[in-house]
Image 1: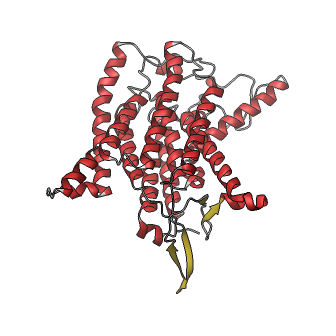
Image 2: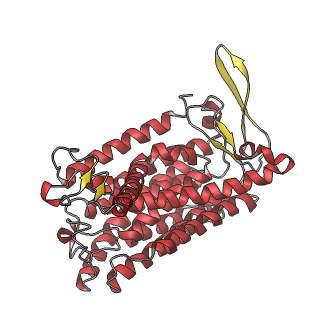
Image 3: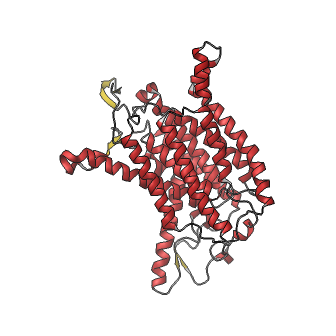
Length: 423
């Protein structure tokens, strides 16, 4: 809203109004605004939740031996993040921009999905929450909607980066003059760093472009659902998901800025996505909201984000990466989320194999992976066979595990950014 107001003032010759046209100015304001809202609203939200005794339900000790320690802490803290993101984006963003509208819609959808899950857990006293199939259906539906929007919207276009020659060992890059709809995406560690989904279905012949878009939409749905679930699984320790996500959003903000800046996109030989500068506003708003939320969520947490926050954070990470055509960088950037998801899959499938033989089989001491680092000998299942029984050797404090996961995510974020040059 304020963007359009100050553009009007600029047209009237009001001094200083032109500052609102600079993405850096609006992005920093969005970060500060989101941080302030998160800190202020978070305090009032926690008090309100405590007065109404809306808190974390006690979990089954056989599944989560640490759940007793978390009883009584207000949950659904994702509402704080939601408000802190929406307000600065609406005030400072360009609301006619297709990418900003997509991000706001995705934020609301995933927050609503997570809120429904939390509502069932807290008010219906069902610790399982929303049935997994319905949660997955909601995630895939959002992914399909995003993919189809990017396919159908005339505003969702790119200018492809084309190698035009060599000079002194340096590859010369030019961007096409025309804006086109494209099924191309960035692939890391490869010199010609664009992968075309249409080429992956080249066997379709004359219909390969249509097949490429079908593959793109399906890939979009898969990526968004996977990252959303990964963030959800990562949310198991105080400050864990919020801290990792803040770091990931810093990297995504850098990638979004590069994609929206013609000169940098040309220098780094990556596709130019006109209009994606508004995603920098969203990234900074989310970063400010998460930092403010960490004020109350670090150990010992005064509030949990719940699925309202974790599903929203993971879903928007996936949507943003798809918009700037960097979804294939997510396994590296969101490596911690990936490891959490893989650990649960391996643990579940291996346990099922053991159950069919009447035995207790486990891969890790506990899953998701972050929980295995704090398991004490008395918490292990009697008579169970563990593949990694002696790893780790000693349990660690929750705060130590959280910070170490943050450090790993910082390294992965740095590696993700330098993939733009390492080919």
